[in-house]
Length: 131
Image 1 (cartoon, rainbow, N blue to C red):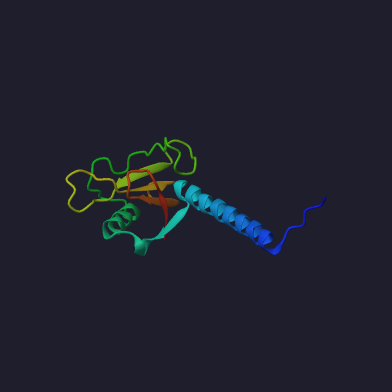
Image 2: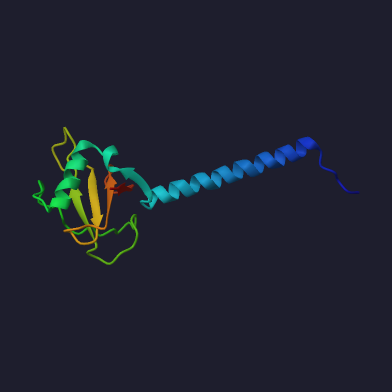
């Protein structure tokens, strides 16, 4: 005997499909954010990050000894590139006595980077800087 779905059954199926679609879309956004694909505008960066970005484009001088060192991207949080492509710079955190957790990581030639990323959680997540 064939079973005929009634209106409420179709509504439940449609609701389940919508929920599944939203879960897939949300997980895709989270994955993109983890891979550094979420953007941030220069104006939306903290003042200290804007200052460091200007210094990067000017070629320095930088405040911290480790500014400009190669960023290894060992966690593969950023797109894969040859070793030496990425360089990191410290973004001062007001009230911190150490370098803190904030960094800008730029890819390409140090004199004229092709792309820069901002992290405020010590490399856990990155946001591509829109310039």
